[in-house]
Image (cartoon, rainbow, N blue to C red; front, top):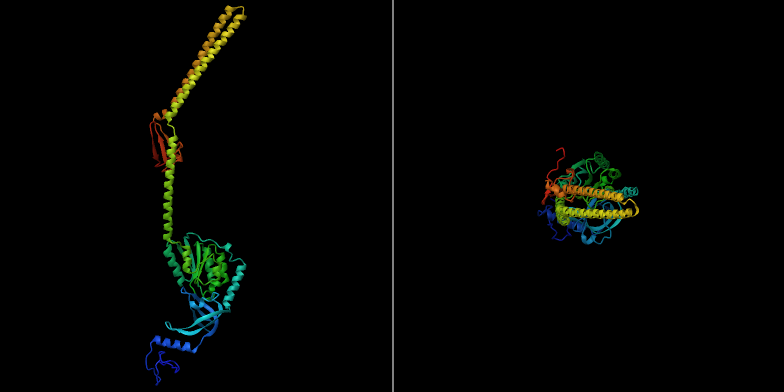
Length: 463
């Protein structure tokens, strides 16, 4: 191994002087990378580099990682948190920027990189400009209107996936669906997601999924990448196919910071393919917990209803009058009516008697044949008395028949013959078994006492 040597370098930089052209010591990989890093950092001072951002990633630590490229080459860049927190704008893929930084080597991986100290915008990249033009065109057409977005089904029984059959995004989505709700049916519509003609093939896969009608919701996804890697999802045909699809579409393209035309056209955007799978598959455990909570609430409600109805039955039972008592009251009323009828008949006979006597006196005073008239009067009086007695006898017989009918038709008499009265849970008399259902409560009244029962089975009259 030949190693160049700079005589101006300090002696502690990991290189050993040699005089014969051969190294006097064997270096480790770490020593080699550290030496090259020191050479780069001493050779290149703080400088400005212009290029287009690609593969941009904002790490949880706050550091920014991206690739700066132009038509001939690219270089990896890193901008640490203490530097990027002063930026007044958010970097995105496709932006043309000017970066001031230090050239160095990342020793752990031996990668040449640029450590950005500051960064400013210098215009937009060609692809990003095309992206903005297409986005503005479709937005003016109303393709992205929120009113056109369709809601997702709450519990989708079938899910379609448009992605590459060999991609990691498909594995992530399938693993998420299997973990959260394994009962969901999955239909995969494989298609290239990168390269020439991929946009048209993605649009065809979306149309195929809509025409087949196999799924209730459709996921379009792929893993992260540069703006060139994701460019198939910025195709106009993909956006129009998404809006023409008869089922809701979720876009899960790239990482959370990646935006494509498909994201704006879809009914819902997910930050990642895994996030898209989570949106269409509520966790089975959470659903079971919800069902358990609903069952418990239903049980409590049923118990409250039973308590309320029991209290109502108790209240109604206190208001309910025994049939025997009602019969006694009716008998007393009929007796009173008989007495009033008898009294009225006696008064009527007495009045008729007084009337006859008055007429007799008038006749005696006016008729010269008093003996005949007296005999006639006596005859009329006898007939009148007989008629009154006959009428009284008829009224008495009618009263006896009414009393006999009342006693025969009285509920207590019917119950004494072995019959019973059946009421449903609402207190209404049951006359037809067709109105009953299994498990319904019944209240049965006998000649003496009663009982509560529950319907075991309902039979028809033919049965």
